Image 1: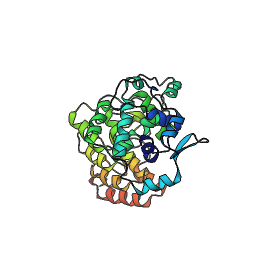
Image 2: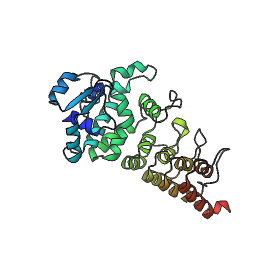
Image 3: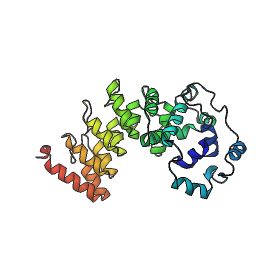
Image 4: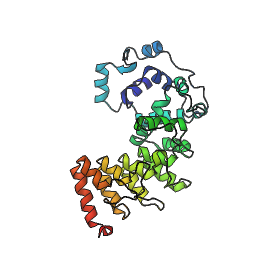
Length: 301
């Protein structure tokens, strides 16, 4: 049943080695032998009684067609699957063995095939569905900087053309803002200790990550806090409003100019403004929103 849950609810079809590694995770354990207790592929296929198949060309696991149709028609077969998958991913990332891995040796990840999926997608599952227990589990690793190897894998996936080798680790708040996990963002701010305006990879503070990825609720929460500058550009001269304009996110574009500093036609450094980005990309709705906000802003008069 765990194998069927992963194949049917994962963000992408899992590779055979990823799935087997995921099934070996001991929930809640912070100290286990990475790679231990991994089921063999024949054992896994036999346990699933012919309901899964290995795509040998892509090395991915699939459900047989009729089962995929059945599960799509009966979404209540698995109880809170995304919450359970987030817990598995966090358990894996929070293990001592994974934390000890070095970013300097890419061969390290060959013995932890589940690591890349966990680093990239745990937050996606958590945003979709997060129980109280999973929320507390998520807070434990996020109280410390996101591990360097997990940061590297996440940024390499999101920005494959950027240099991700020298990225500093995300803080917990950067990570939760990147994924848009509202409950975790609120809790991290309330407990204190997070640099709410601090920079991370690409020079981006939490607000920029939330704006870039279209997380409206997180943007609203961060804008209400002291120490957050909505006009601060990152290393590429993109302000949070520029990110929202480029990402064609109407809701975030509506919110950010409510703060006077986020002028749609002004940048803190020499470079394109949010208005010019919208014009260049031909995003008419975004351009209209920015122009209306700009006309109403007292800073433009």
